[in-house]
Amino acid sequence: MANDTEALHRLSELLVEFFEKFSSWEHGVVRGEELTLPQMHTVEILGATGPMRMKELAGKMGVTTGTLTVLVDKLEDKGVVRRMPNKDDRRSILVGLTEEGQAHYRSHDKHHLSLTRELTAELESEDMENLLRLLDTMNSRF
Image 1 (spheres, rainbow, N blue to C red):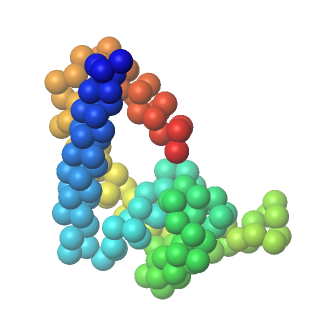
Image 2: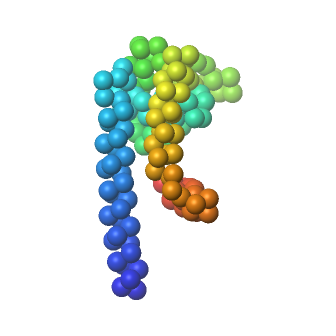
């Protein structure tokens, strides 16, 4: 049991360290760009999933709908996203990327793919499969 506790502490330390390094890298990527990091996160989610209801998008981002409204307003002013009626539910609005938003998504996605390639370059295919499975499991817990 002591080893499990030690392993959990070490894992916790490594997760925090990874988060801090990844966060710093992300800030560096968007520094000097047109979009802030929270705006870019909005674009990333919409680019990966397609148009979404505001409530769904807020849930994926872990923010309130009020916070998201401010983000979407600014992104809409920049021509990056647009609001559109939801054909399946007239009471809700969908948010989707414009062509400019798609361009931002593709550009940022290239940065992510490059970093991922660099971080996983020395992994064997079995290790890569395990990492995918473990991250998928961990992400499903949020």
